[in-house]
Image (tube, rainbow, N blue to C red):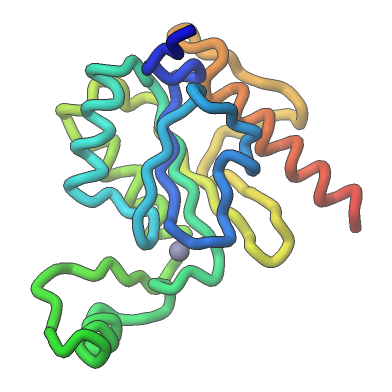
Length: 180
Ligand SMILES: [Zn+2]
């Protein structure tokens, strides 16, 4: 049997490369269910925007989930500081933006906005930002509409998409609450 290349949940997840984040485990993903894009900081770099455009136009995804995290290596450092560390280790000053940020929530919102503003990404009405707390394993949504626990909000275009992932996020939260 040949597996369909189109993600079954019709969702693309952008997250950090941080080794403590396992998107498949976090969201209970099986092969074939979602695109996962990763880089340092979960930032909307040109290559992320390119990949999201391809993900949607060629492979049928309609939703984007941005998952940043606490204790990120790029958090609380300036561009200059990160560049200086890279230069110290490599001997070369990096001629590129390193993507450091001072405010985690603001950085996620900026990433969500950058994706929403990218007009060659076909579906931009379901772009949501989340923060994963590496200390307690909880996930919270940023600026999301209030939603009762355990309910999913099916979207017309993708009944199994972010709604299902959101349910998993909420399930994860409940799991953490229970253990307290
Ligand atoms: Zn990180």
